Structures are given as C-alpha cells and as structure tokens.
Length: 98
Image (tube, rainbow, N blue to C red):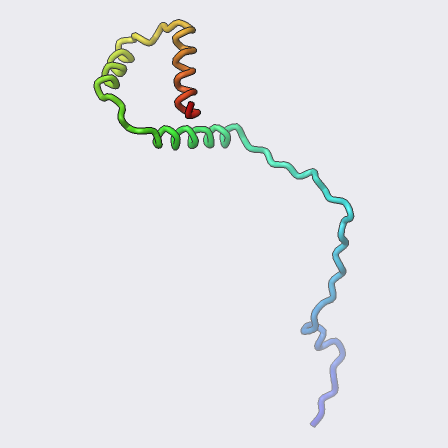
C-alpha cells in the first residue's frame, strides 16, 4: 500500500532557514560601566578591613584601656588641627604600609 504525500504536512519538521547575520565593519565603543559611590565605599571598607586584620595583634591592652577612658572622659573632644593632622598621617601611613 502507498500513501501519497499531503502538501505542507511535513514542513513543521523541516529546519527553518534564517537570514545571515550582518557583520558591522566598525566597532562600537559606546559601552560604559558606572560604579556607584556605595559600591566604591564598600570596596574601600573591605580593603581597609582586610589590611587591618592582617596587622599583628600585639596591641597593648593597658594602652587600649587608657585610650577608652580618655574617650569616655572627653579628652579627645577639642583637639588642635595639628594633632588631628598628625593622627591622620599616622593612620594613613599604617593603612598604606609605609
């Protein structure tokens, strides 16, 4: 027994032909990335934290307790700009590894 082919019945099973992709001859360079200030701040905090944790933990407990008591008593509330700048320089040097 022979069954004749029914018109367009087999077209659902045939692969569809797609149009070729046109390649651009020029490169587009208008892509950019913007990083938010919050993301930059988090990255800075992470970097500083990892550096601080890598420092030796030989902090003198007595000196730390003295600093805590001075903070509580208000000793550091009215510092001169010179002292603040000197402290900032020491902090920057320790964080930058100088």
